[in-house]
Length: 200
Image (cartoon, rainbow, N blue to C red; front, side, top):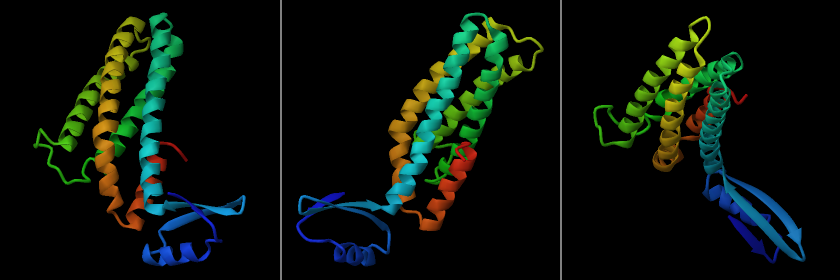
């Protein structure tokens, strides 16, 4: 939230912070005789940071796979394999973080097939099954570029659809649920997200 005030606003932040339990942060600048006051809610900053990490990781994972696919389509398995291996590690840790930290936020049972969390878990299982084929090929001494490309292409299509649906459907739900968590829980989740998603 941004405010433009005619008077120096030092008392306003103090009064509002008392009401909001010290959750607000402030950025004050003077311009042309007026005071510009930008107000941020610390809760929203923490929650947004978690979701931003997930979104950035989505892009990083898809980027790794796209680069690997480009090389595989050229028949260059030797150069592509390290990228595919990095992709597998990144996707495994991403799915593990979402399943372990976020899917259970609403306490939805996996058997409730029409619930967003249950759909997320089902799609993660499908992704893991597709990833198993890639891992099996990587375990070979000299993975076949054509076969690896086929499975990576399938994963690319699945992930693009999954990430889009997740960001559209799950992110708003996670945001609302996380806003209700206490400060210790939110900060703890942010720290675990940074560690799990290799952002630290």
